[in-house]
Length: 419
Image (cartoon, rainbow, N blue to C red; front, side, top):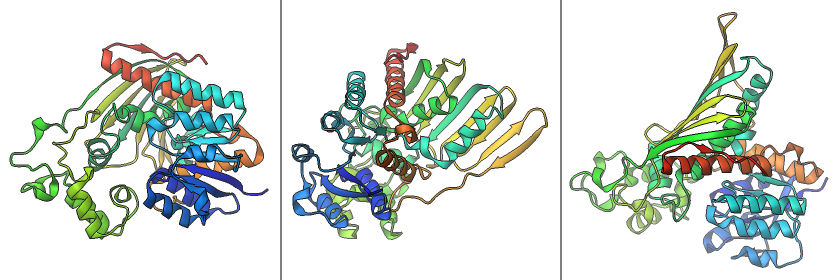
């Protein structure tokens, strides 16, 4: 079978990461064109994939205006830029892998699902947590009835103090009006994952959360607007100067440092922290997304679940406890501990991983597994290997939107699961 040919729209962290999976699997896929407005990123991506100058363009519309030139497209633009290219490439007959979130409102999400179904193309959303060996092992245990019927689930996403500061205080996802809500940007993975492991659609949700810490009211006395100029920087847990300098010194040149600088040098970092958004004091930014949130859910099966997202922790794997009628399961993203009520015994399962994607977070090997599944589906014409297809992804997005309405309006919201 010939390799799947791909267009990459957006050569940021996600697009570059997927591109490197392609470079590591030349028998499976190859990139034939890229659209990226930033010249440094576009040139670097084109060089890595040996693209002709005419196939490395600033605007995806130029590629969409040509005769069909690839089997599929990876849409890896910023969240608010997903709708238009998804609709356009679906109409042109391209198979589509769309980064999460698929879109930011119900009408746009439904429009994408309608478009890909009408076009009959293979479609996957980047809900990579569904694809990890850990999730597959956990799902196998639950589906086999090892702990009986699932009654309740507790799920925690420990975002990490520095990740919150990087992405959601100083970074691209700091404002809901410019990007999207914290729940959609960071945790649509988790609400999607919960419906996947429970195996039933959510029906009702409630939510509470707010921006509590990263505000001007908590700014230390004497703090400057930028970390490089701050006399109390050395006492601050959120110091950009310390964090990014340590990343550079340790040779960690991928995410998150690659978001801050195009070239990993002390001079480039100093300039970025002195003039760019990532050098700002976390108490003097224009952020408004929440730094902690809880979502309570009821599912059609009768199962209840709670999800907690919080910034105030060491960044770590997600943690889950699942309570069944015959046993209890706890997982930390790496291993599963299963306790059996009848025998009063515990066993541990440690799923095997397949190797992380280079230069960036692998989401527990989910990134690689998503690309593996998508290219396999396109090559074979069999969408059944896709675990994050249009209807499943639409439902998870509707759940996120309902939860955010619940938080803002102080009431229980119903999830409309009709298609």
